[in-house]
Image 1: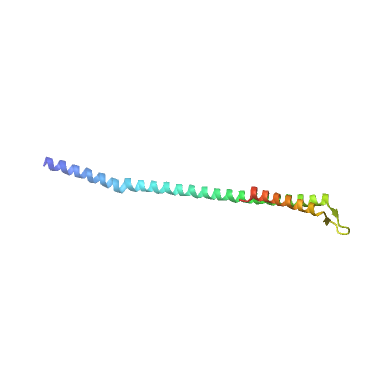
Image 2 (image 1 turned 90 degrees about the vertical axis):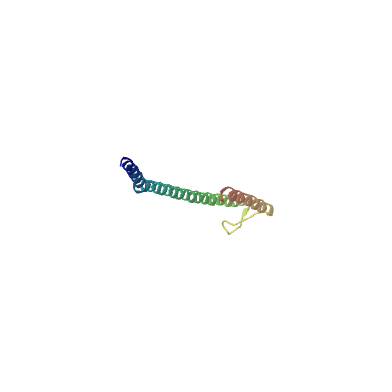
Length: 122
């Protein structure tokens, strides 16, 4: 009877240990892992949203700067023609200039526009 009681006690302890593992420890571990994965997913989503917002803001800022650069290049073109040409009589804001002046202004404007697009188009 003594050996039988001893074996019964060992089996009881073994059954209790296995039951504890499957009923209490394993579900708690799985809940903790699931919570960790949820937090990691939420953090990743927030980072993606922040990165997208930053990219949109940078793109909008680049578009504004690009527009200003284009306007500046066009203004320099017309200023150059205005300074080196003559105003057409009776037509305010319209200028005549020699061909070499127009070609030079066009080349400069084209180079300025290419520089604007190179710097700010992404």
